[in-house]
Length: 424
Figure 1: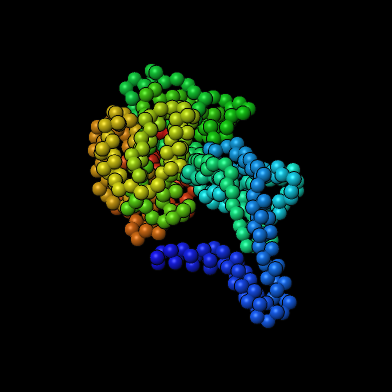
Figure 2: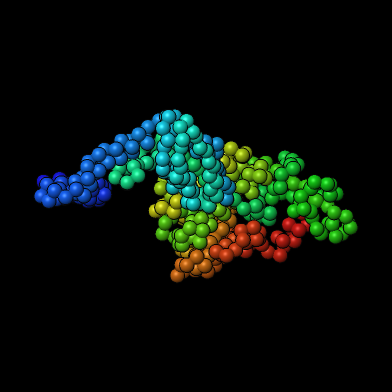
């Protein structure tokens, strides 16, 4: 009984407050007209008696004979690209449709396709909305809702058209011109390597510059020595695989949005995967958020798309630390495989997992996000020291850093290594 009373109160005084008010006014006018015989409340009561049904049928008629079509040509985009949508509303009836509120239901940040339109008989209107996708993830677009009512605001009706459609926004990957990890040193790889037009970590020779060559391929020491522009020639690594492991343990991530370690970690993982796949290297990917996500090491653009799909949905909601993840998945890493770990963890224990697989011949590298620059009360100094003591090639990324520069050279780059790379 109490629940019924609450529902009645909500219906009368919240959802249809104006209709309730006009009903009360009607009864007051009727009583006043019967008791006093004054003409004004009598006429007002007649106006309400005939006006409310007219308003009701007006609102109902406005919802009929409406056709809505949407065009969304692309449902896969990359962060920073524009999502374009065309909405067409057509009046298929012979009566004018007044004050139609058209709203496209969506959770894409910044997307607004709402319009207030009036359609004449057999008239249609089309408009296009362009929204910049500033956030990666899976979003929903649609259905389109058309809401209308009467001029007095007594009645409102809403019809929906179409079905929800998913839009997947991939994370943005940064071009890394000089990213370096320890080479695999496969036995006999010198005999089987072959030249490639891709930029790879393996530079073998130089040749004279030709029109169309990228400037980042120019080998400046040889250019200075010979007096003419010289570019590097690259070759493929025959069999070594690169594995990128992303730490999604919720206990180690700090900050929110673009200023958080989660978004930076995802972008770093996407950039590293892109770098090696463009070099025609086999790249695998592992993360543990809501569940374990594994993409076996492969080459090609389709494989990169699958990795981006996993990164687009990646959330720092896991409860498995990076050390346990590396240990549990170590069976996937064969001898001479290279593993790149991306983590903001300030704990030192996980470094032992990298040292363990390194003893088996796996080459390891780490990309550390300095948690203190993202708002954490702890810093990564102890982790950095443990990695240096374990002779693990390390990059440190801070919140304000540009990835193309902070991932150019790591802490493991000694003068001898730099000299050797320069000679190539």
